[in-house]
Image 1 (tube, one colour):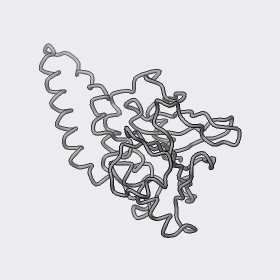
Image 2 (tube, helix red, strand yellow; image 1 turned 120 degrees about the vertical axis):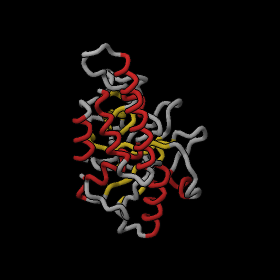
Image 3 (cartoon, helix red, strand yellow; image 1 turned 30 degrees about the vertical axis):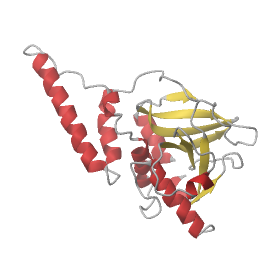
Image 4 (cartoon, rainbow, N blue to C red; image 1 turned 90 degrees about the vertical axis):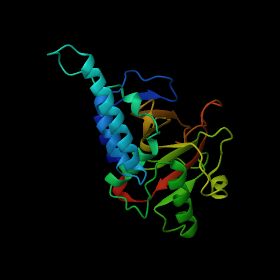
Length: 232
């Protein structure tokens, strides 16, 4: 949790309610280097970093050529240029690494679906000893350090047990790190939320369970209870 908060602070403490279509302010372009750091965490990262660096250097070179002699250096390109490939899973992988979670416990991945598979399998194999235990969001109130995940597929899953029946299949998903609860809110930090690291405040019931998102938004299908103190 502290690692997620540190990144949120680095990005300017961007905060929104629910599922907005825009941020209150645009993320600063200099956070490009942070996105590269997230990619360094996952196996797919080196190839993505090379492509990003080539694009970055080519854009800066082109902008520099257009300036008159003696003009100050050009502004860096918009952070949105680094939105593809999506880096939200790389962000969660980075946060887990920074928190000291071993790779064999939380396998870093560029896709949420695949580390979710690993967490579900680990819990099935050792229900009492698993570091992350899956729960139905309708039945479990998350606490700081947990992960809350939604399925962004065209035909989304609504329960984590459905995912257990299709391991290895890619689905576009998104997970955020829960950092605060109470006041009928679940507050969670995620990466690549409108091209930035953002804290989102989701509505919750009186017991602290996240309410279902609006029907046109990705449904929550699992909350992973984090049973490791080092990520609190």
